[in-house]
Image (cartoon, rainbow, N blue to C red; front, side, top):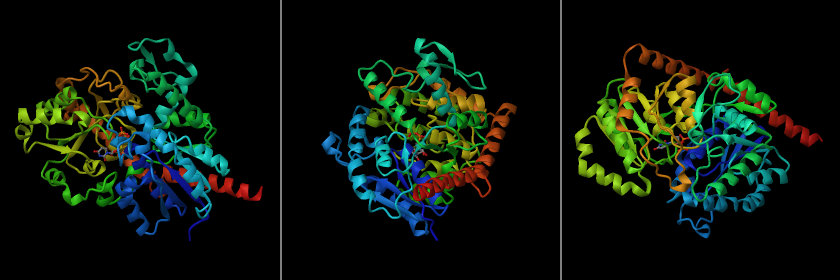
Amino acid sequence: MASSLHFLITPLMSPGHLIPMVDMAKLIAQHNVAVTILITPRNAERYGTVLHRAIASGLPVKILQLELPASEYGLPDGCESVDDLPTFNLTKNFFDAFATLQKPLEDVFYLLKPRPSCIISDKHVTWTEEVAKKFQIPWVIFDGMSCFTQLVTHNLCVSKIHESLADSDPLILPGLPDTIYMTKSQLPGLFNPGNNARAMEILLEREKIRAVELGAYGTLINSFDEMEKRYIDEFKKLKQGRVWFIGPFSNSNKNDLDRAQRGSKDSVSNHEYMKWLDSQHNRSVIYACLGSLTWLTPLQFIELALGLENSKFPFILVVKGGTRIEEVEKWLDETGFESRVKGRGVLIRGWASQVLILSHPAVGAFLTHCGWNSTIEGVCAGVPLITWPQFADQFLNERLVVQVLGTGVAVGAKRVIHLEGEDGGAMQVRREDVCKAAKIVMDEGEEGEERREKAKCLKQMAEKAIEEGGSSQFNLNLFIEDIRLHTNKGLVG
Ligand code: UDP
């Protein structure tokens, strides 16, 4: 029998946010709590296959669809996800269009049965805080970043040590038990807004999100105690205990169909590359994918492709060229890259079934941009990472895996790319850097073995965390009981 608890989940419509929140919805529903997930029609198509399978399996999940007025806000028709934006200069339009859903959500709130006991909102969807206030229920945020990043963010906000620094000045991340160096130009946008025309406007938006976030009832994090134990206690103190580490979410996708369709409708039968992986030796392939939003400039794409080719290892390279895809395709065509690497290298154009690929035994390393989802998916796969961070929290995640966890090797990216400024950027990483990092990671000597061993240990811990009796299961139960207590108090008081 379902309990009377009902959580309303409000994700940001972007794969790096929707994917983990769909996983989270399923995880919570497995604990006998009804969940309703707010989604727009295009995204309902994209994520619906996975959600409907969860519903068909008996989980108490509901989908609440609200129309996004895309064209009224200057967005192309049907553009309902950040990865559909033709240019990141339209990000604000997208956020503004999304915020208009506040009124329709309030209108249907009365119809949601049982009455929602809390809203779990992506921290970027700040307008849901007003909805929670209006209906007097807790506003819990899902922060799609690591505990490490969130602690560093807090410490920088308090210490402000970055403010007096020039872009290339090194700083030691304040208040951590480790000595970790970065430059200001590698910090997330809140501390490193860049110099483009819209930098200040974007900074103000980020500060607004931060201010609203600080008023949240609590925070849910897609991470697990064992991986971030050096930072968790300190962060819990800051949040007065109202922070729950309940990941890794990607591990909740137990069957290949869920893994294949996570974030897309593609069917596994289409995946020629899975057949190709079957033909490769165990741990021999480098899988290279820089997330859902990053598209490298042709200049940097060429370095990545040639770096992989020169490394001589088999590889899968996911191609996302954005508005400059034609230039990338022209280069591929004119240089005969694909026929040169045929049999040893596979290009995937568009969406790759990342967790399915990562779960294949042939994959020996993951070249990633260190988005938090990709980072933790790499951890769950138990493979070492080759790190090429681009923006946001990605340089921090790189430090976590390279320096703290010891499972990554950096290609040597030097500074954040400011997406909204269309900052394609100069050459930061060369083919030799990619090739060198690949060789270090795939090395069969002592150092490589040690790194692989650490990755394997983390994978085992990740698996245990979300199983019965694991730390994340325990934390999720604590969270549910906290909301239950809060709800009951409200009914009595
Ligand atoms: N992803 C995928 N296939 C792709 C690109 C991305 O499955 O071709 C998924 C990936 O597994 C992850 C998410 O999209 O779950 C990307 O989130 P992340 O935080 O790594 O980076 P972002 O895309 O937000 O920069």
